[in-house]
Image (cartoon, rainbow, N blue to C red; front, side):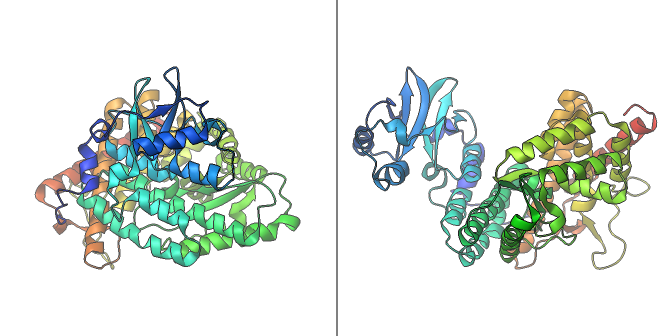
Length: 485
């Protein structure tokens, strides 16, 4: 299953193996937080840098960029004799000097920032910028996110979203891990969502009560690919009045969901989206939903848990989700009846292994002879990881993070957790490469892989991955049946 080789100068490929340490170009440029804005600007001009670190007694207080000077000082008509601390970003995000450059790229994309201080323990080692990482590459996630937030209309967002498929193909060519690819592709979806909400509020006016827009499913887990539909919802403050506030939030949700559909994130076939009244409710109503699903885990409830237990705040007042998640995890931790139903539901989706352990492709229909990498390979691992997280009451959402915690908390032993993580990375990487290959020849991305696309070695790896999943499914099934879950 070969893709065209990545260029030797491919920035993403280089960033896989290059530590941040190797990308630093100079010693850190620092200044006291108490000096004037004018002095800070003069220093940046003299040193020819786009940012300066605010340091006092070797402690990092903040960061000022040329954008801060423009937007927070000059444009705001601020007195430049004031302390530079007035326009600084306090307690900025930082990265360790030995982290891979790719991690810095991901941080910038997710938070829409272009400067990250580099730390060597407690020592300030320097500054890394988006330009250092990407060399202005047109499909860089950092520049794509920045471009998205500059768009004044839906038409501009649609044009920006077209680059997502090229980005995934590029990352596949560069050998990016499935974990990193998922986070980066999801960062683009988050940015499109955030910008649509900003444009929606610009058109409709400010929200009458606080809310948080929540990503669910693969976006919530940071595991999106170029083949993704929408799963989202809105949690509203309990001050919400359906008569007074309902029309506003209905209009805002429709604006965002319709916009995402136009950008290529098609409507959820099951209508699990914020534009559906059921999934646009105040926090108290959401608490009732989760209580019902946990206490009465009938089939529909179990289906909904697979979507709405994998949630992450994207835009708005995040505390609304944080408080709700804490409430939910208190109910799921050690809840044997609920967890037993989840296990039984998870066992309904199993790897495609035949009677004698061989790979058994789909027997008939449109996808005859293929393997559904998503539903028969990746989803069973997601299900197992979700069960472990809910059993332990842990708030991790990413499948890889859930498996890490499952080993730490003893939900499954460390070897099994490691094997599951490896199986997930292998199967998810196959899926991304398969989709990239189809995109490269003008076909729509899908999840159906023909075994002929694989080498004999890859077929054996796939068989081993499926066997790992089947073994862990059996372990959880037996544990529940023995009454020890």
